[in-house]
Length: 553
Image (cartoon, rainbow, N blue to C red; front, side, top):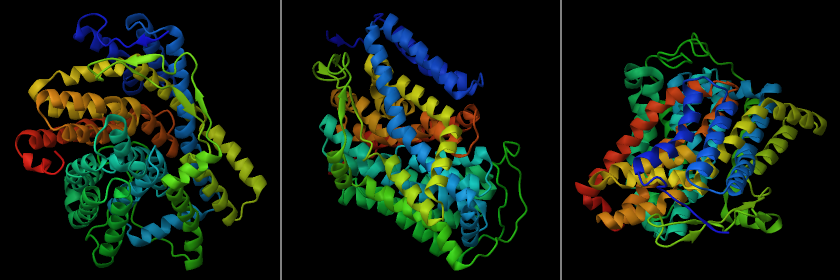
């Protein structure tokens, strides 16, 4: 029996929208204000979503349960699989002392904490976003920052803020490619349009990141390095996205940014070295300011050995992200399991789509091609290089599973919630509320993308969810469909820092368990402020500076 989604079951968009917002509100209030543990808050949000989907929106109970199950499976693979294996690698490097050598080698480039943030959180993180995406950059950079001595809130929150500008082109352009494929956009045109929005923020975010960490004065002291970092990322991002396509935007821009910053620091260092490891104004949140100390110098062979596991990780993640690699591995093993009682039995309805469209509901067990599998293999190879035997690796892996058990449960519950809201149409009801804003639609349509990522944890999923609606609304209002399709993705990147799974990844990587609410409260302002700035830029592009739409209109 086919069930058609209903977006306004009470013939009042106000009432329907308020009800659709309840599950997300329950989870966020539980995390941010009631200080519930993350898995409990996620379970409460899921329970309320089930009740509203079934009782208010008329979704059959069996379908609701199966949608939640599909989401839970997705939470384990690929998201939880990434978290588990990156923490495994980090554990290995800590236990044998090589991570301390890596810390000292980074401090040898610069002891200034602000500059370490630019290098690790922004530039290095952007490379991992471009190569893998799906939580990998936050897991890697937060683990490195906590190892370097940053406070848990600083390591978590700043990794999330830094992982914004690269997100639209993450995982070798997957969000852009998916947007074009699913909703009929021209992939080069929409890639170019995003590349005329995000470079402004690739320049802004490094300044924002350092201001969030060290305040206005602390940011002004190193503005030349911040400018070098931002410009050397933004310019390649614009050029590659406009003239090559979406696949290698982040990889090329990140390499340019890292190289430019390291070379610049050979000829320039700030007059005052910033040694605090805590966020300005949050000195009691897990860390204290430390006096400047000269980093320990290690033999070149020891430094090379310390970096080797991370170089191996970088190589494996990049290779695993290549479409050819994924296709080859999926050809070996990637069985699809249609979710019986759900697959092709739910229809999206106009105005979200031009005509009733059946929703697929298949779980692909892409274990071999999953990024987490590449990370696991890299960790094993790195562990052998570091001198671990196979029994020791197995024991360490068992300890890691125990360490992250509640984080994995939380990710499962949160993905179950997000998937249920998609199949029940709750998220579409929220999107339609944004789409009814008329002349203000360029601004609120951008925030629709932000909402989509905040709900699903993925710019790709947000593009699938709202990309069609953006196109329909833009055509009805006489706006460029490519502009609003791009705005969905560009606005979405700012929702990445508050999506629940990213926050859990950050808290797990820093081992700041049960503090997800503290992280959420800290990053929420930054998220909505930056998303609003993207909305203002899109509005200007729509009405004031239409020449930015040339070629891609």
